[in-house]
Length: 92
Image (cartoon, rainbow, N blue to C red; front, side, top):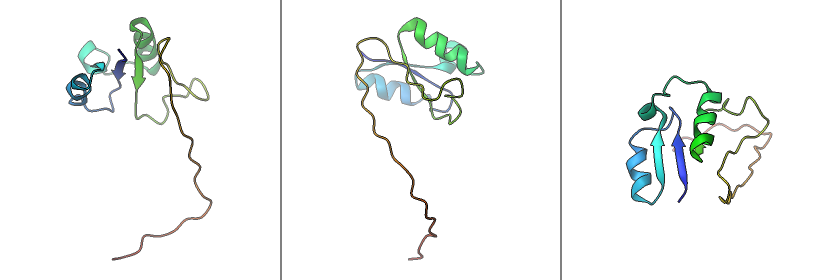
């Protein structure tokens, strides 16, 4: 079973929805880490064998790319690149 620790930016209501889909999920606010540092959250997740789910753009500030997953979990990813052009939205 994949174990997830949801960071503060993820709504708490996501926990039961993920649990209904077979994930073991908990939220940092449910374990007293709602104001914890990124490092404390990573350490808590590591101690419990959890993947951290976050929307924080700066969560990776300690390393260039951070993906913490327990041993045996396969990670699939895709890399997108933004184009150099900027366009305005069309009215319609």
